[in-house]
Image 1 (spheres, protein in one colour):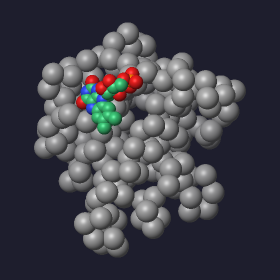
Image 2 (cartoon, rainbow, N blue to C red; image 1 turned 90 degrees about the vertical axis):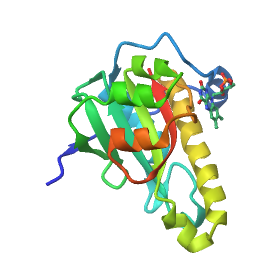
Image 3 (cartoon, helix red, strand yellow; image 1 turned 135 degrees about the horizontal axis):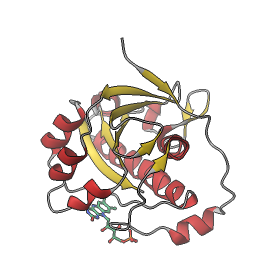
Image 4 (cartoon, helix red, strand yellow; image 1 turned 120 degrees about the horizontal axis):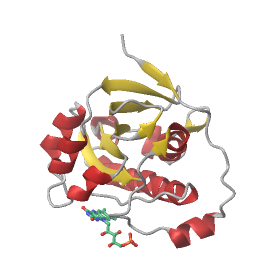
Amino acid sequence: MAKIIPLEKAPKESGMPLEGAIKARRSKRAGWKHSVTLFELSQLLWSAQGKTADVHRSVPSAGATYPLETFVSAKSVEGLAPGIYKYLPEEHALEVVDENDATEKIGIACGKYLFVRDAPLCIIIVAECSRTTSRFGERGMRYIHMEVGSAYQNIALEAVALNLGTVVIGAFDDDAVKKAIGTEFEPLCILPIG
Ligand SMILES: Cc1cc2nc3c(=O)[nH]c(=O)nc-3n(C[C@H](O)[C@H](O)[C@H](O)COP(=O)(O)O)c2cc1C
């Protein structure tokens, strides 16, 4: 049976004005914090895909098809063992996917962006594209790419509100990422955070 780890209720409002977070956001590639807390991870995941009301989530989704799945590669998260986890928006919880630290594999999958290994955690967003293309045909791919942009911008702004930083990585070896996190879905972006 899948091991489930409940997350602290989110969101807790940071008090940072939205405009301040937009202005302060910059891509971060060095100077990572040594660790982040489980509370901070809870806030970041909620901003990416958390439920806001009945079926609604923190980002819009074409036809409410919700093709995105959010994975976490934890290296140094206080209160969470290193490993791979999948975010469950319904429960606001993590499902344990692999209890082995995959940081090195994800760093290598990012080729020249080896700095990914130095961050205390990575969020990896993947898509089960058929959820959206079965409804909208090939045009659904366009919708998926729009949706992931909303999700990663929310994460980037929430990171600022938590006094953390991130960068969205789009250049990586798809198959290596799939293998590292154990999914058949399409990896769309990786965000080292800290
Ligand atoms: C779709 C997309 C893909 C990106 N891929 C990478 C990447 O693979 N590696 C990287 O270091 N930065 C990547 N970036 C970050 C950009 O380089 C960065 O946003 C740009 O230089 C502007 O800097 P700023 O984010 O600090 O404003 C990507 C940004 C976007 C929007």
